[in-house]
Each structure stands twice: as C-alpha cells, then as structure tokens.
Image 1 (cartoon, rainbow, N blue to C red):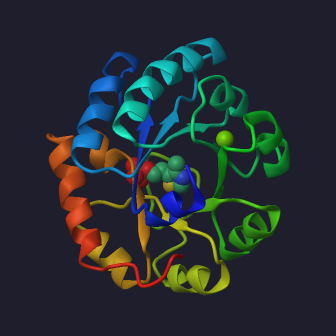
Image 2 (image 1 turned 45 degrees about the vertical axis):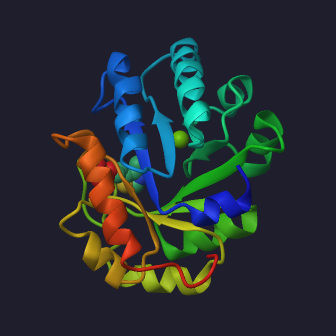
Length: 217
Ligand code: TZP
Ligand code: MG
C-alpha cells in the first residue's frame, strides 16, 4: 500500500473479534469488500499470537486477491510474517519507529489518537495515518471519553496526514461527522452488527462520495 492508496481511502472497517467470531471473519471480510470498503483491520484482543497469525494469514490471502489492504492491530511481527499492508498501534504500544523496523519498510503504520494533542504527536512521530476519536461514546471502546464533533475541524487543520474519525459512527450520524469536517471514517459495530454488512458499507460509501475529497489529505 502506498501513501496515495491511503489518501484515497475513506471507509475503514475493523474485524473486531469482540463482535465477529473467528470462523465468520472471512465471510464478513467478503461482505465488507463487496460493499466497497477501502481498508480492513484485524483487531483480535484476547487471542494468542499464534491464533492471530493464522487468522491474519487466511484473511490476507482473501484481501490481497481483492486488492484491499489488511492492517493488523498491535502486532507488527504478524504484519511482517503475513505481508500485511499495515500495522495499527495504540497510545500504549511500542513507538512507531520500532513497529516499522519489525513490520518492514513497506508496511504502513497507523496510530490511535484521542485528542488533538495526541494527533499532532503521532504526526511528528511519523504515523502514516491516524485514527481520531472516539467521536461519540461507544461500547466498542468504553473507557474513553468522547472527543465530540467540534474537534474534528481542529485536528484536520493541525495534522497533514490522513485522519480516520472513529467511535460511535453509524450511517445515521455519518452526515453530521462529515459536515463537521471529517473526510474519512472507521465504522466497527455499525458494520459488524448490520443485517447486511455489504449494503451497510455501500450506503456509507455513497454518503462519503457526496463529499468528494478536495485535496490528498
Ligand atoms: N478506537 C477509538 S473508538 C474505537 C476504537 C477502536 C471503537 C469504534 O467502534 P464503533 O463500534 O464503530 O464505535
Ligand atoms: Mg494496541
């Protein structure tokens, strides 16, 4: 995945094993891809490394065939072994430079940020993209206070790398998130709990396309 691929990406889905069974991951990935998802992350808190590696390898065979980048949460060593396109780090994980060294130079590194200050730090630390949120309170990440819609424009003014707004974003509030200045979003439970994940992704892409990107970032 190149920086250009990343900057074209607008809808990021996460296969969070808190919502989807291991055995259903491939089917869910297929549905997301059918709906036009731009990036998929594997977030498998609670599984041991060997299980995550096996799942990641299976998923990467599928995503690579369909041309959708796969990003591995927390595990640069697994990203390297399966040749995933990216690795995603949280605030308490290893430094970006260390993850890059482990994952390999071709692997993008993203970082979760929960304030404008953290977003600026992640930019200077060398992140290829950031997640910014939770925008709204969400059961998927319950211990984090929501940053709110107001900070969205501020972070876009401050940070010149792709910013994916995340947290409590659903089809219903997506227009508000975009009106607040977001260009890219991550949707987790909205997609994974949808009756038809492909259709849900398709609708989200349609809403996103009503606000074309006016510049790369
Ligand atoms: N980081 C910030 S909020 C969040 C993560 C992983 C969870 C987003 O999930 P949902 O279900 O779309 O609110
Ligand atoms: Mg982490």
